[in-house]
Image 1 (cartoon, rainbow, N blue to C red):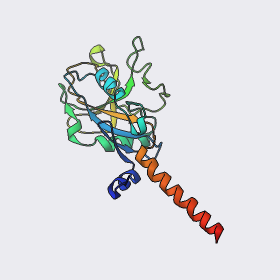
Image 2 (image 1 turned 30 degrees about the vertical axis):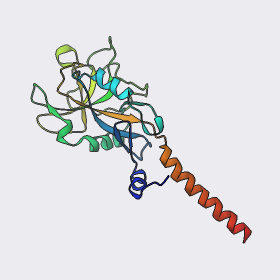
Image 3 (image 1 turned 135 degrees about the vertical axis):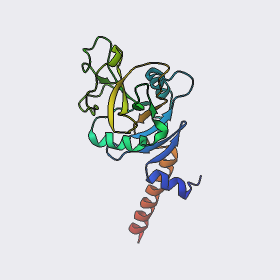
Image 4 (image 1 turned 60 degrees about the vertical axis):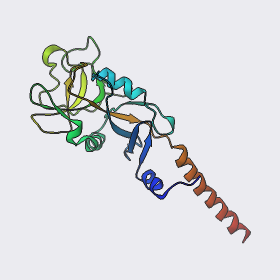
Amino acid sequence: MRFSKIGMSLVAMGIVASSQATWTQWSGNGHYYDVIEITGNDYSWTAARDQAAALTGPGGSPVTLATITSAAENSFVFSLIDNPTYWAIDGAGNNEGPYLGGFQPAGAAEPAGGWEWITGEAWSYTSWTAGEPNNSGGNENILVYFGPGGSRTSNWNDGGNVSNSVIHYYVAETQAVPEPMSMVVLSAALAGVVARRRKAKLA
């Protein structure tokens, strides 16, 4: 089976199409990310979480909402969503970006207590907008990107988990597992190295 030059270039850039997503790899941790539109009429964080979990990443790897554990990772993910397509103005006139995989479990101390990532990773890095989280309205317990007014920023907001949300996108993340086609290319390259070494020994 031939692997096209375009396909090889995309793999080299860390861009792989798989399971209704076009994954972009971040060199910082080797994980893949994409911005995905929620399907159906339920635009809640819960719906986004479940739809992310139904995706399949490169090589069959499991998918979750993205978890952000460093400023560098946050900057990379923001570069993927820094497009007006993925943002929407809420009822207060602020810009709401895609969902992330952070949430505040029931019973946690408001407004900032108990936040965690759906993967169980340590909640060690945050990028809250000034004055956030604030649990506005008494029911904000999920994580989204946020921009005051019409701006887009890499900062976060605590949002409400509601089906009629203006947010229609989420950031998905998956571990780096090679695509079968990538393995074909890698195997071919290794075979070439072995053949050259054997030829050198015979000489």
